[in-house]
Length: 183
Image (cartoon, rainbow, N blue to C red; front, side, top):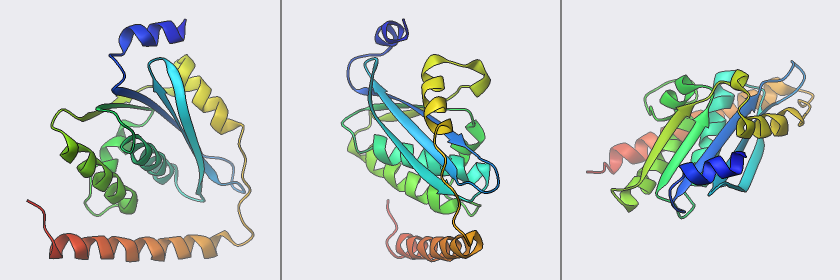
């Protein structure tokens, strides 16, 4: 039934439907981000990765980054990203200084390349609450909840390392943007 409904709703092959889900586990586990991609009513591919020991908000930004990076590399004109956090979606396309800015910069960079390819290309963010139990969203939810990755022995060390690496990366991107402005 779901596949039939999707086929009747989606225009021909240049639209990609993308669903993301984040599992923020108990204290001794890593957060997991998962993304599933659908085209013409069939699942094309999926990605799942540990987001690490992080806040739920940053794990959602990581999932959107995973989603947008993969989707913009495909031969499509229209991306519909379905999430249960429009706040994270808004923040994901905001390159200003904030927690998770490194993810936003990667997302904005991928979208800039995507939109420069054609003026007809577009992306939409749709809100779908997990409690709605929509069948496609449930598939992604079940995928991510069946995955458990234990945190490493000394997580503070890896968080500090990732934090400093993220700051260095952001500074490098800002230097490049200010030295070579576009427009």
